[in-house]
Structures are given as C-alpha cells and as structure tokens.
Amino acid sequence: MNSWAELKSSCMDCHKCPLADTRTNVVFGVGNENAEVMFIGEGPGQQEDLKGEPFVGRSGQLLDKLMATVDLYRDKNIYIANIVKCRPPQNRDPLPEEQEACAGWLDAQIKMMNPKIVVCVGRIAAQRYISKDFKVTKEHGVFYEIDGRLFMGTYHPASLLRNPRQKPDAFEDFIALRDKINEICERTY
Picture 1 (cartoon, helix red, strand yellow):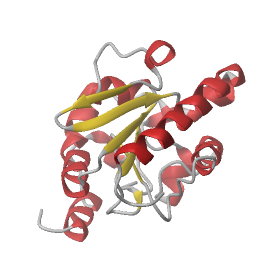
Picture 2 (tube, one colour):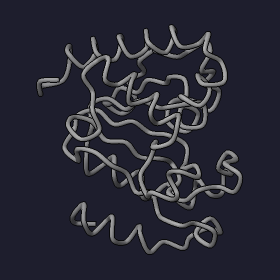
Picture 3 (tube, helix red, strand yellow):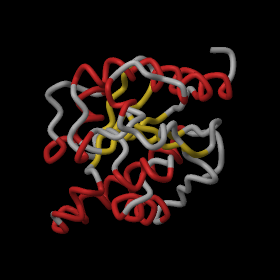
C-alpha cells in the first residue's frame, strides 16, 4: 500500500475470514497516524463494532482515563488499533487463523506509522507481538526491544474492570510508559 488512505480503503473491503460475515463495521483504528506511540488491542467488542472505532465501551473509557493521566490522547499523540479488525462473536478471543488472516493490516499500519513504542493491551496482543509465553501478571510494564522498536504489555482494561486490585499495577505501567516516552521520543507529549 502506498498511503494510509489506500490501506484503510482496502481493509474496509476485507473478507479474508468469517468474521467479516457478522461485522457491523470494520474497526481499522483511530488516532494520530504519525504518533510515536501505538496501542494494540486484540479485537473489537460490541460497542466498537457498532461505532467502528477501537476501545469505545466501558473498557475504552478506562483506557482513555489511564492514558490521560500521562498526557496521552487518541485525538492528539497516540494511535490505537487491534489485531483483528472485525468483532469475534460474543467477544471471544480471536482465533489464531483469524489473527493470521488479519495480520497484514496491522503489520502494514505498524510499518507505515513506524512507532517507537508499541503498547500491547492485554494477553492476546502481548503474546502475538512480544512472546507467545507472555504472562501479563508477571511481565506487565516491562519493555522489550524487538526489531529496533520497544514493546510493552499491560493489562487489558476489561480485566481491570473485573479485577480492580490490578489497577495500581496498570497505573504504574502507564507511569513507566510516560517515562520511556520522555526518554526516547522526539515529539513533546
């Protein structure tokens, strides 16, 4: 793909897996396409499918609050996307074959954006991009350099809503993220 618009247009017409048959909207991503920080989730839920934007339900509201505590905003200085662009039925985890069918879209987004830091939101994203054995409860907030880019895994906000005791750990992850941004990013955050 030669441009962001061309990539998005092609993705919107995707029918590479059965998730396309049940979607309301393709959830391509949202934010600053030139940001140095990218957040990656696993896939859209019901609210995201209806609106066509990632992380807009209750968990998205919590993610926005966590990001705001360290001056990160989807309309300003970060970009948010998902591994799969269509909602899995009943919000189940995306199957490996669905992830593979959709991988080219996110990989192209990462390549075009070239972020310095990628935050994997939840286990599925971290296992895909950091390590297949990634354990969020043990490795959250740790930065890994992979192919010249830093990756960090953190708790999925849906998990934080179910287990509020994890919120302080997640907050510490965002403080570590802010510190890393200030250390390596060129743009003011």
